[in-house]
Image 1 (cartoon, rainbow, N blue to C red):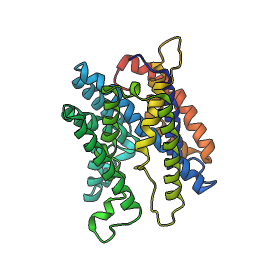
Image 2 (cartoon, rainbow, N blue to C red; image 1 turned 45 degrees about the vertical axis):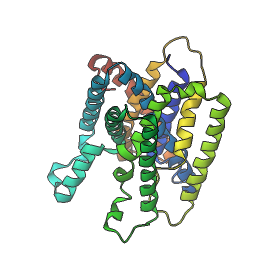
Image 3 (tube, rainbow, N blue to C red; image 1 turned 60 degrees about the vertical axis):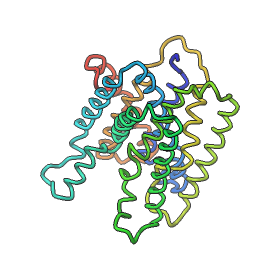
Image 4 (spheres, rainbow, N blue to C red; image 1 turned 90 degrees about the vertical axis):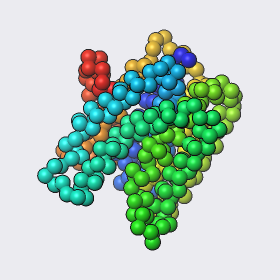
Length: 320
């Protein structure tokens, strides 16, 4: 399959959403509207990224490049974990509790790097189960996804407060991880490519599910954002299983002519994704900006720094 320009443009939009998510866009203006964006609309970004990864992972498996892919993902993870080490490790303050936190960060990934760890582990697991009957793969992925949603809702609404394990339900790594979040969407992208589902479904059907998916997502996020009994934010929305693949398929269906290869868009998006958290933390240290100004600042500075990172990557080949 030739490169999808619309999919590259989608990556760009999703990367901007991720920046808005981490900035907490509009949080000081209206709590509910901010929730509908940050813990609602913007939450489609990572699941779609996982679907894209799974979609292209199918070709990696078919071409026998899994080992190279795994080492590349591992190298990417190690490089950026080392880059962010000053933010997540303080050796002088290590104790039993912080050591446990440290191990958790190393395994699951610091802050936004959980996405890289999730892709790596999900890809490895998918390779192991790739020859399973597709029905069992769907059942497995769906079951794991629903468990993640269950843990998220149980933690946010204190369903099991009497149980000692309940305190972990609100930890991101407990529900937003490679098993309950990344693997279901990576495997979905893998199956979409394997069975060429993007060719089987009509454009009208795909756009119908896009509309329905967004309605379900915004309804679900409004329910949680306006609920006084909720504690914490949201990652594992049930509606994501509808809207994320629908948007992905819509991108594949929407053919945009391009005079040349647009792979550079994906490369710059990766760069902005990796560096923007550093820019965000530094901006908060030196400037007092509202969320809109902070969003613009982080986006612009990250884009500028990405020019250098992309150039450096051409020589080192393991940064992006």
